[in-house]
Image (cartoon, rainbow, N blue to C red; front, side, top):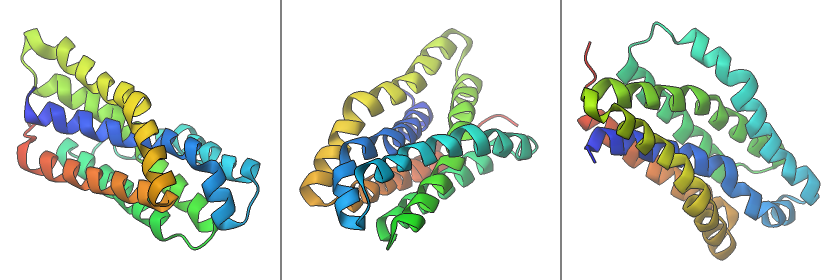
Length: 182
């Protein structure tokens, strides 16, 4: 797999994992932040609303931004949101961190598909799209259970720290190896 496509797939894996991994950590989050499990469950809803309500606005507002700086900027916002989740002292700030993280999700995923196709030869475009989709599949099949395992073993904040570290690796790979045509 070409490194740029791998980097984009890894980014999709990160955003997919960040979306769903918290589901397995709701009792831990609820206990730690002294809220009910249903209240902690709203952290899933907050992320989803960030993706569905704010995400399209981000896409519209960034249509003229060059693609490589945009994809790097979106991942930087994603990293910042996850790091904010790691240090959030309370429920309100954790919710804000989740929503911030989610704002980059939809635009990043759409851009990952676009860039994967753009940089691939004609006979590999379908394969490139499948690899980007694989990022979501792996997030659900591996990222979520691993995130739950890490969070239950080392504290729920560690899940967000690991996601942020993988996202930072994604940023480095994209910065070094993604060279979309002008």
